[in-house]
Image (cartoon, rainbow, N blue to C red; front, side):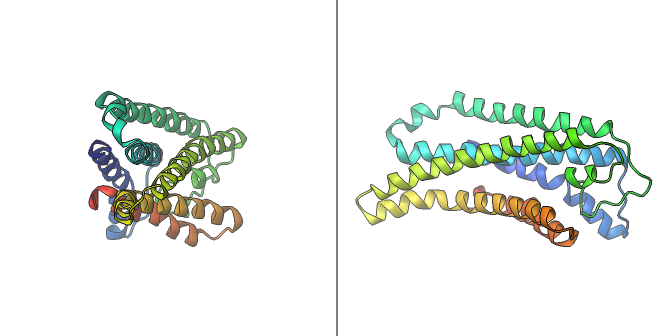
Length: 233
């Protein structure tokens, strides 16, 4: 558990470091300019660490599932080799997801006036500014959102459905509370991460107001890492 917490903490630090320093510099200098190379770089690392956050939260849900539903087999199942392999696979998946999407941006041509209605270079906002055909980019983005968003979410929901069933079968209230308390911080971060992420894209799809989208995005880019389960572990 603490191995995953340490990895999640590191990823959260890197995640916030991709956007917050630049945002603070912009506020300090009263300048909202970013170079093209800087924008591409920011998009790459943002997608990389956001995806890692997502997958690590899923891995931690599996860890809680094994700990609560199969406590006698926990040390055997969640051995150091498997834990390291799960983190390594998460890194590989996220690199293979973010790199092609950023490379696909390089083939696009942009109009002269470029203004991103956001506090960082968000992929969807950048793609909307292009003068080129973005059908392929949209398809890749939607497929990525389904696989890296829907897949891990389904895994988390399945894990917690099993966890709830196991907790309900525990005879004493004290043991139920102790078992559930190990999941509260993780569950709160998962809810905030997915809730705000879904809210951002639903609001941007239903309305053209950028203010609500940018405000909601602060929740999962700034506040969610601050609620890292390691802070309450």
